[in-house]
Image (cartoon, rainbow, N blue to C red; front, top):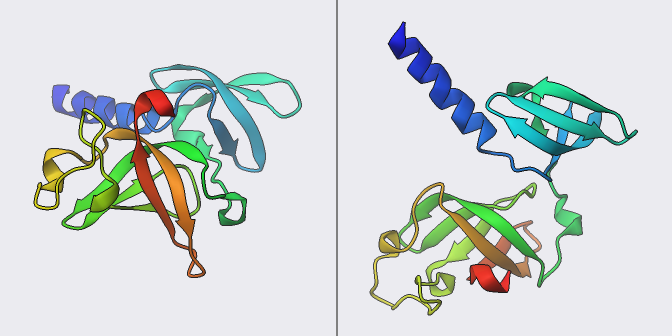
Length: 151
């Protein structure tokens, strides 16, 4: 029925939207690179050079190990959760990035004001560019927003 197909379409869009062409993906123990995507089907170029089509639901992102993260590295990130003093962002690592309010940028590239509500500048699932500011011993990562043009 129509309601079921709407739910299926939304789920396919949600899963497929997590990936972009060029992303590293993993299926079981095989790793490869996403070279094409069409609705619920991905074409993967595997490490051995072969290509195959898989269901988008089979693909898992290859996460960047914490040990490989370095201060100054830039990433495309997705806002995961916005809260009063900042946001958590997913930039493809084993850990989420903590984006403090002081490092959030407005559309014109300036930092938001001290009393400016963060929710006017960041929304859940928004795509942003970030740079790693600090790695901590507790395995947390602080990031700052950067302009899209600078990333």
